[in-house]
Length: 199
Length: 199
DNA sequence: AATAATTATGACATAATGTCATTGGAGTGA
DNA sequence: TCACTCCAATGACATTATGTCATAATTATT
Image (tube, rainbow over all chains, first blue to last red; front, side, top):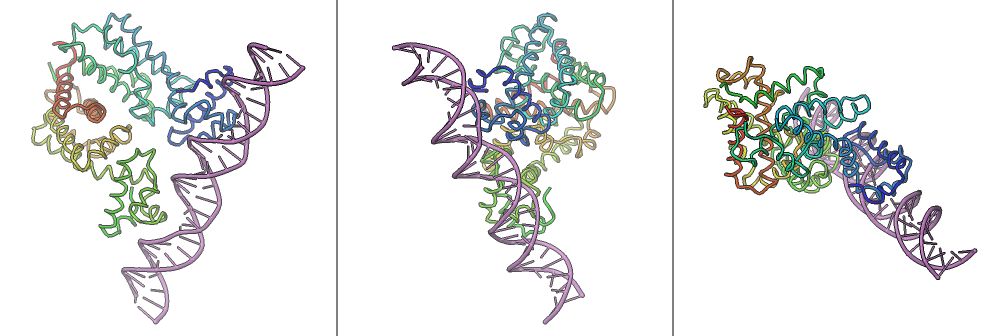
């Protein structure tokens, strides 16, 4: 995940390389992108690239992490603000993500990311077990939830995140408005909140 | 999706090629697999391969479809057998898939498929909007469901399939027993059936 | 037997990957 | 000032892959 050599570089050079890589990942999926295009654009020799990163994947996930760092933080904040209300916290998180991925500067980059989404990329992008999810679930108010133990919160979070990801992909696949897209997300959230079977 | 030339081939030759390809996709992900290995194993010249398939992806999805054809059919059958009961139908489908993907001959192949799962592959593998899902949702009994229109069934099916896929991936990621895995799936299904919030 | 249609073949042009030996330069200590 | 150390920079290279294409071989059709 970015070798020390890269991190030692002057910031403007780092930025030049990351910009070139982001440009390439805006043009093509991870599968179709090439190191050649990145180094040409960033004006660095081929050997240097491999001094900085293991390979394409390495820089791909490095850049993605830069863009998703605040998403992971936002969830904890929401849980505090909404007093452990999990559904509200995730709906707010979704709106936050939606604004972020459809911002002028990032839209085409994210379009490419989401149209080629795989499970590994998803794990990098959303809060997950490997990072701070364990701390996060401590913040959830489970009194109103239909579970026997805090452990089962994992199931709920996974379901919610699956729903979020699917709806995000729809943004770029269909040409729905942001409003309509959020409307559907909220409908689905309520569906699993109250149950898909009638009370 | 497999050119006519391939389909004209004698069946044993077709099979030889498909076997070689499946072997390669058991060894490596779509990203890491190579045409070279397939043609070496199948003992056909390079040119022939490209007479039969557009490229690696082409044969990858062709093989996957062979293995998922009956899964898609099974869902309709279940809906008939279970009189439109959607949750029961999907739980049965899950058990059917689980047996299939962990069968002696297919286990390592599917392990590779699932550990490298992406959304495109998922759409190929599970019943989806593009194929007969529209007919399928006609079979669902929506009287007990918490929706206003049959259209919204799509949301429910998507949520259920997302849950299924995540649990299938777990089979190969963690080393859970099949029994424990199904137990968790059923728990999650009941969770969304009754709602994640207490009644 | 002649001709048409289809399939088989492997050499080739092209492009990509990751490595490595060497060069260059900045900082340090004597 | 010099020698030395430590990184960073560099691009040629071996290797491996892709997809194409002209031609040969085989099979079908008349």
